[in-house]
Amino acid sequence: MSTTKFVFVTGGVVSSLGKGVAAASLAAILESRGLKVTLIKLDPYINVDPGTMSPFQHGEVFVTDDGAETDLDLGHYERFIETRMHQANNFTSGRIYQSVLEKERRGEYLGKTVQVIPHITNEIQAYIKRGAGIGTPDAVDVAIAEVGGTVGDIESLPFLEAVRQLSLKLGPNNSAFVHLSYLPWIPTAGELKTKPTQHTVQKLREIGIQPDALLCRADRSIPEEERQKISLFTNVPEWGVISMPDVDTIYKVPRLLHEQGLDRLICDKLNLNTPPANLQRWDDLVHALQHLERTVKVAMVGKYVELSDSYKSVNEALRHAGLKNHTRVQITGIDSEALTPDNVAEQLQSFDAILVPGGFGERGVEGKIAAARYARENKLPYLGICLGMQVATIEYARHMAGLKQANSTEFDPHTPEPVIALITEWKDADGSIQQRQADGDLGGTMRLGAQSSDVQPGTLAHQIYGDVVTERHRHRYEANTRYLDKLREAGLVISALTQREHLTEIVELPQSVHPWYMGVQFHPEFKSTPWDSHPLFDSYIAAALHAQKAAAQP
Image 1 (spheres, rainbow, N blue to C red):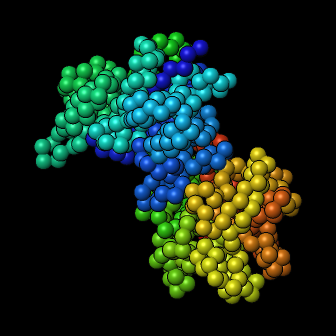
Image 2 (image 1 turned 180 degrees about the horizontal axis):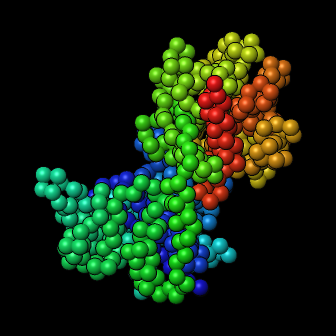
Image 3 (image 1 turned 90 degrees about the horizontal axis):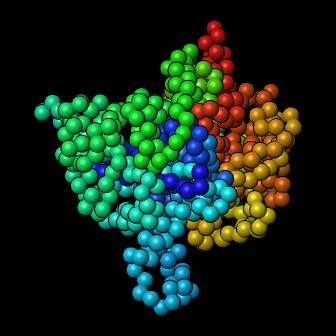
């Protein structure tokens, strides 16, 4: 196919309705029809990227192979379709304005007044085309662009105007609009209310966009009468009003949308002649999820545990590994701020495995150290990711290597034993030398993206990864190379180091001492998919099953 077609996904009434999952599901169905598809997320906030945003604000930050810090929806995209995400698949208002202002400073606008229309909107369109790979060998058949925020917000207006202009320029049959809306159930009236949906579509039509399909989110299916009413008041044909009730797993959504003909509607609108959709692997996945043989209990010790989005990819990676082991993984969040050496046994004794995920800042770190110690001393399978590896290293240094005041300079800048510290120079994947200072921009001082390191033979890490590990990174602080020998002498195995700087990538305990204890500096969760679960998580869940079995032995 010569021309890239576009589907623009917008949202109305309230946020967090699941636009990302809906967009990813549509992409998955179109992919099953033999089309090459990609997804692009447009975020209306002014932050240049979500890298320095609080998880309370944003949920998790997803990282791509090429080192982009992106919206968590890109995690859904990679889990649902084959195409990998890159820097160009996510951008914010901040990045657009930054780009336009830099051009203005360089005199590229030839002294003209720089305005939202046409300069900002043109830049947005240029970024969308870049995300779709237009003009490159990576150009796709269909690019699905998800506009963040809700229709009616001041922030998202330039984006909506830009996609309206782009659809006009593309001409008929080259773009489609899908709008996600919410239908509240009012218990006292005993009915679903369509008025918010009518209003949000009215708002959309005021700015010149007529949706081709409406995805109606509710806690139940939309009755026929309501569908007719919505169709009448929104100018969307009845077959374009699609019910999206709550489901117990997001992996049911592709089948749900397909059965209501969303992919057929989009293919008709875009003049795409394709083979029928084949959703067999999704059906097999849902069947496997519903027929799991046993359950393991994992304690996730973090400080954002009350926010389901903060560890989205970790949760999904655990579930994928559970699937591989025919096991339901029951994940319980344990607030690390409430965890102390005195109550740690009481809080963690009922679990089969312990996981400490990534995070930044001092808050709750001593609770994570207590959890790592409990897992080590009680031979419970332990997986530490990013900060989880660093706390395991600090814990081991304090209680096994005689470094009583061991700490990270992130939590105590003046610690006399900085086992974890800020490194100032490293070599990136492309061979360029990167540098950082403690007082530099937080957004520019991360070790980001995919990097490789050698794995020591005869270790647990080698059983999982083989000779080389390549994973995505997102962190500022590193294990201090000055203390590595001391930690090794005390029995800690450093099973993977970067080739040039000897930065610690994986720490573990010998299996003669502990059945499964490992910390990794990188984020393996970003590369797990339902079809291709991650070998590290597979091994961890298998160890949890083994621990459960051993605990049940009289």
